[in-house]
Amino acid sequence: MTNKLSLRRTQDTVNPTGLSPEHLRFLTEDTYFAGELVQYQELMMMYNCAIHEVRTKLEVLNADLSVRYQRNPIEFISYRIKKPASLIRKMKSRGIPVTVSAIEGNIHDVAGVRVICSFIDDIYVVAEMLTCQDDITLVQTKDYIKNPKDNGYRSLHLLIDIPVFFSDQKKTMRVEVQIRTIAMDFWANLEHQIKYKHVIQNEEEISAELKDCAETIAATDRKMMSIRDKIEAGKTEDPLDEDLLERLAGFRIPTA
Ligand code: GTP
Ligand code: MG
Image (cartoon, rainbow, N blue to C red):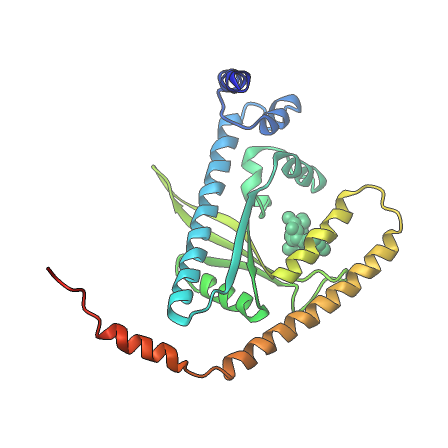
C-alpha cells in the first residue's frame, strides 16, 4: 500500500504537466506538438469544458421531461476526448500539419458526446430540443438512421458549436453528438471491434451476420416503439392512486 502511494507521488513530481502518461508519451516521444504542450493542454481543457456544457444541457432536458411528462428519453450519456494517438493518426492521414493550431479548424470530433435513448423517436426529440437552444449552432446533421451505412450502422450524428465562458474569453467550441438507441449502441460497439482487429478470420461472413443483426435490431426498435404507444394508449387512471392522492390532500402533520 505504501509503495503504491509513494509511486504515485513520484509520478506526480516527475510529471509537472499533469497530463496522463499516455498523453505524455505521444507528446514527447514522437515530438508531435513539440513546444506546444501548454497550448495542447489548454485546448483539451476547453474541449472538456464544452463536453460539460453539452452534458448539462442534456441532463436538464432529461430531468425536465421526466418530471413534466413522466418520460425519460435519455438512458445514459457517455463522452470522450479524442486520444492523442487517434488525433495524430487522423491529422496525418488527412495531410493536416500535426500542430495544435491545426486541430480546431480541421478535426471536428475532438469532443464527443454519446446519448443513448430507449426509443427511436426520443432520438429526434432530444436532437431537436438540444439544437433549438439559442446558444447552440447546428453545423451538420448526419442521419444514419434514415440513411443507414452499407454495413448497417445506425445513429444520428450532430456537429454543434457551443459557447463556453472561460476566465478571460468566450470561446465557441465544436462537439460531436451521436444519438442512438440502446440496441444500435450494442451493435456499434461489437462492429467497432472488427475495425480494430487487424486480421479477422471469416471477416466477410461476420460482416454479413452483423448487417443481418442491424436489420433485426432496426425492426425490433420500431416494434418496441409501437408497443410503447399501445401501452400509452391503453393507460387508464389508477383509482387507487386517486384515492391515495385524496387522502394525502387531507393529511395534516399533527402539531404539538
Ligand atoms: P470519422 O473520420 O471516423 O470521424 O468519420 P466522418 O468524419 O466521416 O464522420 P461520421 O459521422 O461518418 O463518423 C463519426 C463517428 O461515428 C466515428 O468516429 C464512429 O464513432 C462512428 N461511426 C461512424 N460509422 C461507423 C460504423 O460504421 N461503425 C461504428 N461502430 N461506428 C461508426
Ligand atoms: Mg470520429
